[in-house]
Amino acid sequence: MKRTAVIMAGGAGTRLRPLSSDENPKQFLKLFDGQSLVQKTFARLRKLLPAEAIYVSTIAQYAEKSRDHLPEMPPHNVLTEPARRNTAPAVALCMSTIEQRVGPCSVAFLPSDHFIGDEAEFVRVLGRAYEFAEAHDYLLTIGIQPDEPNTGFGYLEIGEALEDEVLRVKRFVEKPSREKAEEFLRAGNYAWNAGMFVWRTTVFRRELENAALEIARVSIENYDAMPSISIDYALMEKAPRVATLRGDFQWSDVGSFEALERVGVVVPEWARPK
Image (cartoon, rainbow, N blue to C red):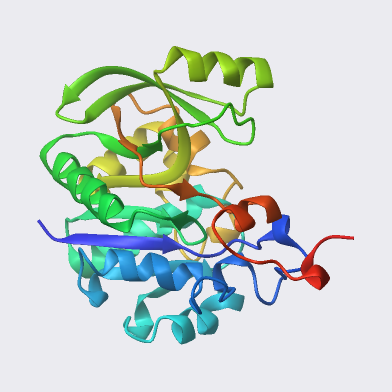
């Protein structure tokens, strides 16, 4: 089965203002050995996929910037959203476009603005995720092994093993209180929800039609009328068959100046919020 991937690059990077801006959001800042996060995400995917199998989903404002950062990728693989409507309509539109171009295939959706320290382990885990998604009628998410009771992330409650390394997701849990987050860490059967997904086109289409028919019928023409809703709310929390692989690959969403410094980025004084 053909494998493809979509890098989600439409975010505005609001948590890192003024270092990040509307014109140059977090995913395009060249802070990581002279590279941007979107470039590093693409480079990781190239270890598994040819350049023509990788797409970028973004807004029109960032289309040219995406092409400039990723010259190896075919220019028409930058897929633009007609309006900002959160991730569910964006993902559904990408899936429709890719299926029309490629036919039935497996697709990974990955944020463009996350840092991963152990790239070899990430590539291994993503490869395993493709394998499972291609063999089973499940939607799969890569959950991050938590190392602190963080209240800034959603969590996955993990159930029984389905296969080697792959576990059933019992439920999605919203961002918890500190007390709840500490309880989850002690329990050991929770992972952070980092918004990394893998599925087959046919499975995705069937599950989205069952969970959110309006969004399943998305098109360029009706995009403005779509509800603004995340793929987690619209689909993942409702789907009956969701699985996860735990990722332990030194992940960070670099969503704060402290997080940037923890991964080795020196933030200049002018770029810090006053």
